[in-house]
Image (cartoon, rainbow, N blue to C red; front, side):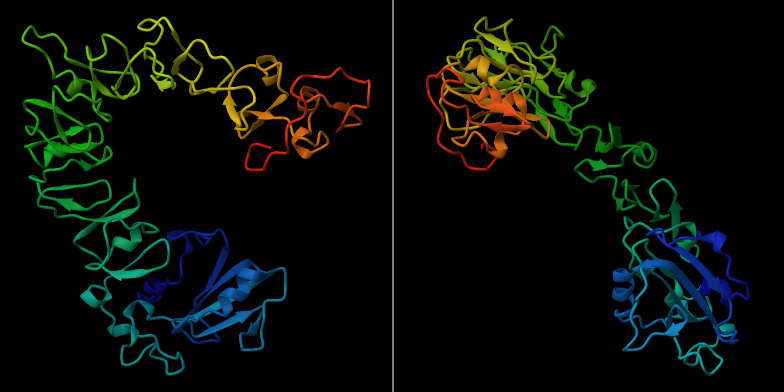
Length: 420
């Protein structure tokens, strides 16, 4: 707004929108109290609490503030539910020397007609968050409000896809946020599809969203971050493209490694006597815990004593008790809350009272509390699973003779750390 006024124009809201970044409507006026060297911006509909924080905060660039037409002073508060606040400014804000606005020159020895917007000290970029910097001090990866913020910085250009003012001249290549890197940078740099890096640096190639050195892994394979690995690396490596993974072959051109459905580049034959996790680690068939193999991983094909559950974990097929979704086995009287996917707890453990409780998309098999009327049993199925009577939308303990005894009895009261 100050740039428009300094150039002799009326304030034109179409250049920067009619709302603040928080969504408040704004109005402007070219003169304040008949003074052509001042202008106003009114922010409308500010909530009472926010409004009081604003008028209590020091704003050195503002000549005067008004709330509902009343000049802000120590005894003025925002009393309405929503408030309109007027901010009065001198025209030469961008020069960095704001005057009192009563001598007609808008600044201290810096009248508007002498303001040079191309001078280095006046080349100011303001971020979307409100902070302002000179062209030399601004980080390229800081977001600005719009293209107009870059106009007075000849060495920068506006990238509308990311809302940044990045350096135009770069002896190398830009990353996604506009920072400049030399072509011989050893690590891979995230460019995020911002342009093929090999156009600027013939010694590099774009691998996924990273700009990596092309020849760094001639005798191995490279992940998306530019790190090189030998073909016989035992563990699986994530973030590797299929083409990179398939660079590893034996003398007969057979693949040594392959990329699985979870995005890991794994050795193919490392687990002939067991099964392989999604990350390429080998496990024996009698591993007690469940192992994540991913949607494309094999389980019972390699180990007949195991099965892949609905969470893509390879778990032991037989469990004398409760088996959680990750394959760990628990006795029916465990005090722990066991995460399960399918089936009701009462069907799995018939000798000990337990109930199924789901929260946030995760289901737990919990011991029944001692107090049947507790909030833990606030549904029909949980109440009846624990031997309670569901009556009038509540769970109550059965009267004598209403229900047969169930072995195990009621369990001690549990804590409320998710187990109940």
